[in-house]
Length: 276
Image (cartoon, rainbow, N blue to C red; front, side, top):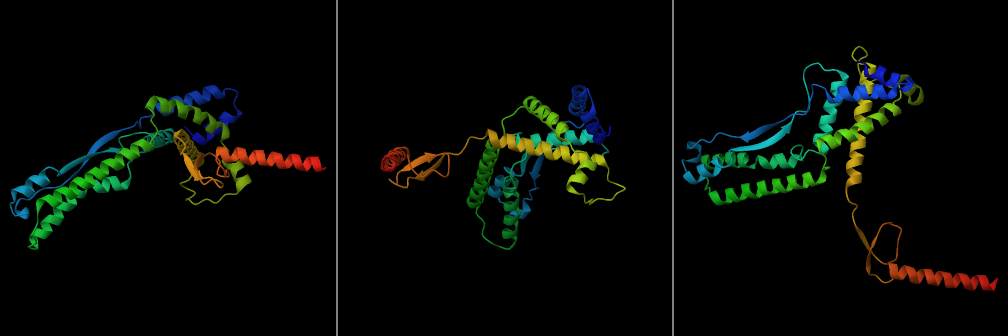
């Protein structure tokens, strides 16, 4: 299926609904479905390297295999444009909605703390330095607690959408994307064109795929942003210096002072009108 031709045919067709539905069906039936699997940060414990100390061996044994969930975000085999769209849809959902994957880099770095502490301890023992288990235990516990806090915050920042709810939202966006599509020739006439890819490799489908993926990402980011509760803002009144909540950054007075200012303005306005 040539995606660019499909988008152009849609604009000129009298059966737009049928074309749109056929495309949507193919996207959601794509072989490139969403997949997650477990990975591990692990390391082998050498008792001799820990000077055969039972306290250190038990400590690091408790943390030598830490799991985390990853999301399959790309495919190496040859795929069709509709599959590329589906892969992007999977990635957008995982990044913005899925509570099990795509946390900040710091989270994954903190999960590596036990491994780093192990090799640091081995190095210290090798150099004849004194090593105590409690400080190591405290450092690992603190790092893992911090990682859990980052994970919790990341989940709170994501949209609470099920996969079926996400599909309904995307279906409405796809219709908008089809309607707003500008063919390559029209885009070039309007904005100019600078091709930065080998001509033998590039096709109009690459343009269409990028267009659709960019739109999907933008629409979903806006959706997540708009669903977040607005932050309550507070400032000091310019007259009484008491704090008040506001919606417009141009507001200067609290409710009480605002009424007083309005009454004063009305009074002065009446005086001016009488003088005339």
